[in-house]
Image: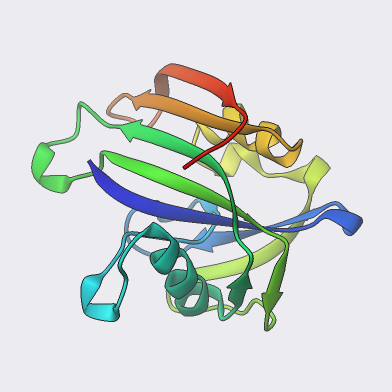
Length: 163
């Protein structure tokens, strides 16, 4: 399964979370964190490298001290395998960064109050795991989607540590 990264920037003292509207490609039209898959041609050796690079490319910030808070498998059995949607995503909370989030060709960032997260405009799995990581929990999960990107099966396991 391909490995991917997902970064969630937060301002804890202000109760805000940064999400970005995906403007093209996989996930287009949905609010999400920033991230992607490692690209060895761009110097990525692992998902942490991709998290750092993608944060710069997608919203113009240099993340610092990322905290891995979740590892989640996303499976799309109804999608043809050549599309490679299945992925294991390493999710990082970001509390410190350099630069101000800005729009790119791929993403349009926006700050949301934690109480006003637009779950109805996000992937359907987000409402199941995102509140837990914002509450300080670490987890491993698995989500299986139908052909219309709706969760048909899910598993969440809370853990003390992640590798």
